[in-house]
Amino acid sequence: MGRKACMTMMMAAIVTGLCACTEKTEITTDMNGSGATDNDNFQIRMTKSVPAQYFSEATEQGQVVRIEYDSRDYTCDNHPATRKPAYVYLPYGYDESRSYDVIYLMHGWTGRAEDTFETLGGAQKNILDWMIQQGDCRPVIVVSPTWDKDNRAKDWGESCEEIAVFYNGYENDLIPAVESRFSTYAETTDRAGIVASRDHRAFGGFSLGSVTTWYIFEHCFDLQRFFLPMSGDSWHVTTFGGQTAPEQTAQFLASVVQASPYGTDNGFHVWHAVGTQDARFYQTHNQAMACLQLTDVFTPHNFSYHQREGGQHDYNSVVKFVYNTLPFFFPDEEQQSFTRTSRISDVMNDPAFGDCGRLIFPVDEGYWSGETLEQLRLVWYNYIDPEKTVEICNYLKAHTGSAFLDIYTETEKQADPQKRNTGLFFFRGSPGAPFSVCNAGGAFAYVGAMHDSFPHALELSKLGYNAFALIYRPDNAYEDLARAITYIYDHADELGVSASGYSLWGGSAGARMAAVLGNAGYLRQLTGRKDIPQAAAVIMQYTGYNTVSQQDAATYACVGTNDGIASWRTMQRRLQSLSALGIPTEFHAYDGLPHGFGLGTGTVAEGWIADAVRFWKAQIDN
View 1 (cartoon, rainbow, N blue to C red):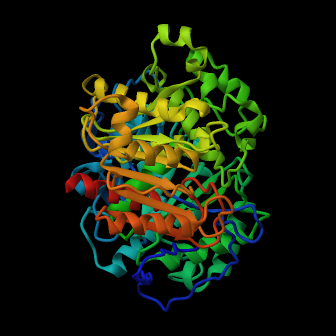
View 2 (spheres, rainbow, N blue to C red):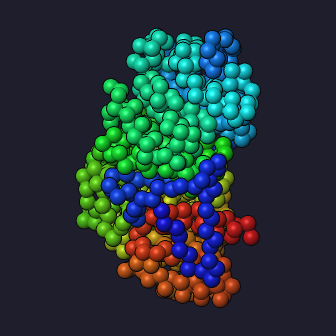
View 3 (cartoon, rainbow, N blue to C red):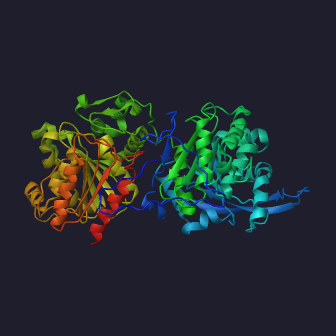
């Protein structure tokens, strides 16, 4: 995948990943700008950040209970009896009269059964609580077992022996013990009952737990529909075979699929994940890329490969992978009601949105096209992400009671009906955190929010910041932004946001809006107020705005070098002029990108929003 080309005075250091235990060998694959392989059907997908608030305690908390069950030491020929522990997360409001999905999560080498819920100060439990409370996924039971016969850390050799035979205890002992005691979809816990309920079961693991997951895939493929191997490969062909013998390993895994009646597009899904700085990167990466080449077996419907940018070989990556995976494995249908094939007209007319549904997409219909969410196209914009479009629509529906705010009164709207085409969509972060106002572009002809402001606001909310996406009148854009800032400032306590340290974001025309209202003089002029503080930072994407003033705010800017609308050199010269005035700036130009790349997902610009947030935070801290 491409890396950012920062047009700064200093060259960024290139950090290469480390490979543990074996010689580094990487499969090379031709990649295009979106991260797709040369068959153009697959994509290396980057994970989303966990919202900052999810690491704190939720209002609705589940509980973790410890159980013990009878098992055997399957490394010995006579299988001596043993008794093993497992830790079971039960969601808030657990009710034995209903059935729950279940996922088994295996620790790594030297780990114990309790690690899943004790590591990182209990972060995994907090995240699960928040996900279920927010409707990110269905209420789910999470089981943390161990392969160790006595739940003690073993040396490498003994642990490798135990993971290779754990599948016996998983089928014969663990599933029956858990699913006869707690309410899952298994009506019986013999093999027939377990297989019959496989659509509601998943198995995953980290490091040696990931290798264990591949043994489960090999020996117990029919017992669950979903697999979550994190930072590890299959060792059927040879130890570290995913790295050193990826093609043979992928062929073997394909044979497992082909031998099963459930080896169809909808019969299973492997969600394979690794951090880009993980010491086990190539064990995971090489195997995943080899699997992606077997397009007759591993399709986009049953196999996906995910990377966490900067992720290392630790539990920080684990909790983030679990956060990204559960909504896919076990979506909350009541909350996640829209899909890629949902009709745009159905979203706009959904009763949950009331009158604001029509504002989710451009009011000026001549600037967009497509019948379904995955077919959405916006004039002048590239890289529209259907998955992000679906996520945004579902988020807005799930938070419909608080997501839309009128910035004009009914009297004002009666006097000027065009003001009915305005408002703020609120993507809530942590209580009391600073806010941002995101302004989409559209050449002051329309508002391209679905690609150029909604995604930014959603990602900022996940980082704990309160974010507002402004729907404005193209002919009165500056007036509407001034009103939005005034509205948020005057209702800060009611909205639960900090009235100071805010930022203004925008792309193209929206970037001009942010720059103008970020100027202290224009802010006073357009709001008619002297008490509203200047923005701490302005975050701009791809615009040719070149006015410079001593009263301008600290400014971060990014643009593509192949932008035919906004020259990167024009943007760079403006920031150099601001810097000469002593105003903090940061500038990035991304090689080859055209106009309107948005979040830049799957491009050389991916991750720019994290840079921008760091810049904003630095201005607040100063």
